[in-house]
Image: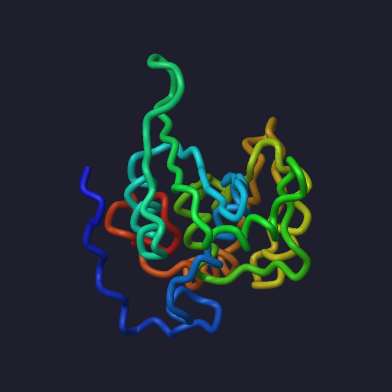
Amino acid sequence: MSLSPPHPPPDPGRQLSLFGTEAADPSVADLAGLLAGPGEVVRMGGTARLSVVVDAGWRVHVLVAELTARGLPPTWEAVGEPDGPRRHLIRTAYASTLAPLARAWARGPVKRPPAGFHLNGRRLRIWLAAAGRADPSGFLLGLGDGDSECWGPVGRALAAVGLAGALLEAGAGGPAYRISGRRRLARLAELVGDRPAAAPAADWPGSP
């Protein structure tokens, strides 16, 4: 698969947001968005590695581009049973540049956001690329199955940027936060920016 699909030009009529994707250059700190969702981090000495399992090939395209833009070109492979749902494991190499992120989020075997954790457009864009999907009532941002200690702080960070969501547990289509309401969905679209070329329109907020 091609790893660098062309990106559509930005909409010149859209006003830039202070917290949107255009507000700063890409940085490793943006990958906290992956950890807010289903991403995992593992430490080894003074290095760390990020990984995430995704459910669609387009997510591989987008996340490979996002990680590579931050100096962390990843590998990926198909996982799961051959006759089961198609899933893909994406992971970086161990890197010292990821160590601060790992120290902030890892509490022994438990993942938890650090004090003062916040979301912005770049973090949300990466989270959405990994685990965002539309549903009939709005838009879902998927969470890690075993990461219940993250859910409260992540929900508060969503609310702080105007995206207060309803927490869905596993039996109700989660774990995920559902963002609903015209104003909040417009806010989500504003923050995450233009749809990547690889992403289906139905899976990206604000797509025509």
